[in-house]
Amino acid sequence: MEFRPCIDIHNGKIKQIVGASLIDKGNNAEENFVSSKDGAFFARKYQEYGLKGGHIILLNPAGSEFYEATKAQAFLALQTYRNGLQIGGGITDLNAMEFLNAGASHVIVTSYVFSDGRIHFDHLEKLVNAVGSEHIVLDLSCKKQGEQYVIMTDRWQKYTTEILNVALLDRLSVYCDEFLIHAVDVEGKSAGIELPLVKMLGSWGKKPITYAGGVHNMADLQQLEKEGQNRVHVTIGSALDLFGGPMQIEEVVAFCENTAKK
Image (tube, rainbow, N blue to C red; front, side, top):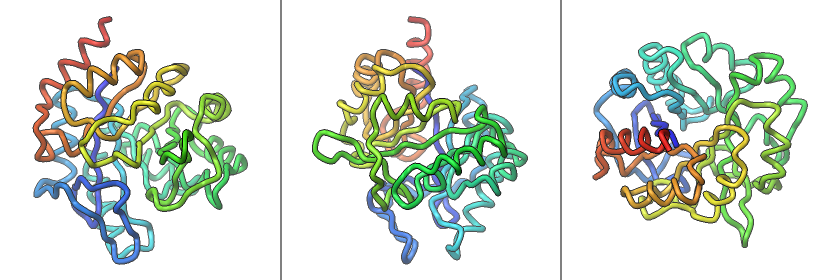
């Protein structure tokens, strides 16, 4: 299990928000933390710890008045830690190479692939042709409906008709290098992980998967390692000390490094 750090950018600021609270209209979100530091600061910090595969997420859509300021912070981070970070938020086959050229190791994609609530395999093919599957992370962030997990798009504001399960992971794995999965119901709440989702992801284990959502103490990390069969990587946002939380990054990094030795 690897620790995969994050840089979430909203209205030109590095923030931690409650995931389900994000609303494009008015550029509003319930904030847990707003940093006075820029993207370069966080990128440098992650580089110092030797952390790779962290993700930058642009939380403003391209039409937002804040998009350019948000993008500028992302570029600061990418240029500070070249090939050390992934980036998502409005990525398509037309702009993906711009972010790779700016220093991203991978582009993270959801809405372009799942537009209109379903998978567009022609979009996936275009993306692969543009940058290669080795540079693609598919974001399958989801919300629970009954006993199933439904993939969400457009900064988690729209439901799709696609159910996240091992069959879908198999089907999509040929188009990407990794998966990123936020448990939207618990994202930003620091109240525990989405255990059934973690168990399902851990049962697959064919490609790297990063889980995000609800981690708030070391017990959560221990549970994630066990129930994810030490196959699922982890992101920690609001609970991390860099974002005002109680979990020390040194302790998190050391724990995850020890799991890699098992």
